[in-house]
Amino acid sequence: FDAVDLIRTKRDHGTLTTPEIDWLVDAYTRGYVTDEQMAALAMAILLNGMTRSEIRDLTLAMIASGERMDFSTLGKPTVDKHSTGGVGDKITLPLMPLVASFGVAVPQLSGRGLGHTGGTLDKLESIPGWRASLTNEEMFAQLRDVGGVICAAGSGLAPADKKLYALRDTTGTVEAIPLIASSIMSKKIAEGTGSLVLDVKFGSGAFMQDYDRALELARTMVDLGNDAGVATTALLTDMNVPLGLAIGNANEVRESVEVLAGGGPADVRELTLALAREMLRLAGQPDADVEAALDDGRAMDTWRRAIAAQGGDPDAPLPVAQETHVVTAPSSGVLVRQDALPFGIAAWRLGAGRARMSDPVVHAAGVDLHAKPGDEVVAGQPLFTLLADDAARFPRALEAVEGAWEIAPAGTEIPARPLVAA
Ligand code: URA
Image 1 (cartoon, rainbow, N blue to C red):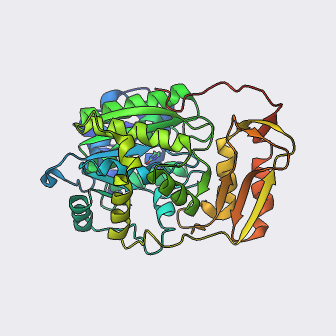
Image 2: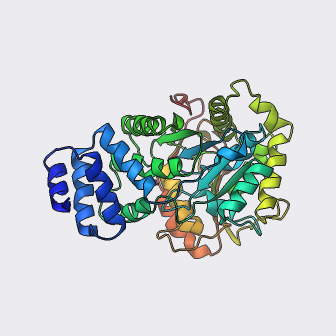
Image 3: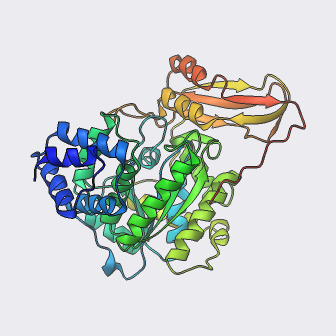
């Protein structure tokens, strides 16, 4: 095959065959198809789309570029969750131990944060001693002994995707549904999970802000998973408002532990329970009493064992910010708006996030919210606290949240928006 012919095919709204896609992904991984050619093709795909069978072929070819994990000898069902990311999205932390406490294996390969969205591994690394990188053998042993594991994906998983995702990042071609769906699903299918629940977010703090595009992404990924033999379903969830009261790293771990102790903010508990029910339904336990497992300490027990198994001390104090800046309510009334994206950007600017994958994060940095939309507030009460290691970071974080929240006169009703939309 010739790369230029394939680019022309997609440019002219044609369809690539299975052998063409197999060749392309293999030749690109080996460096025979150049970055320039792949970028042109990615742009043609972004503009003209792909058929369902092309998306499936691309996903399978990216899986075939690396290793495929296999947990079938564990002797228990495996189920995983993937979130498309958002602001304050720490759900993996309470969810993994909750689901694992029912005797199903949860192999949760996670990532790091980039830009305004946080990363599960960054959050967990605020726990002293906790280690994100495990060998395949360590991962397998933890799934067998503890039931759940949250760790970094090894470099052997879908290397073609790694190369293509980095290229898309620098060529304005991330936002193509066929490319996002195949990127995410190639990693999840290669991971070897038997079933998968997707948390596809829409709204200001989400990757796909528009509901209809999020729905199309969800449908594409669900089809890909099921076509590849992984029982896959999706929830569409609202990311217009930050999840919970903590945005950052250590503070999100703290909040997750509250949820595991049966408390925590209502929205974090609600989404954790909704995803746990769906995961356990796929794993053959449709009647699992997930609320009881949060309230009676079973999920907490699994959390403590999982953290300890990866070298972490579940009782160690978490890092605390050196500097804080409190923003108070200028008037009494009802908090009617709190936009996820600007608060995510503020946490990022405070040091909780990173602009480049090689940057470090500040574990104690972030934003603690003291009120959520719909709450009555009194003039002078704290609305949110900025957390940083250096007070010089506050002005730009404050700039980010300028106009991002609003207090209306007491009695103002805000329309109820379901957290789980579909
Ligand atoms: N996350 C991924 O892993 N890939 C994408 O393309 C987008 C988000």
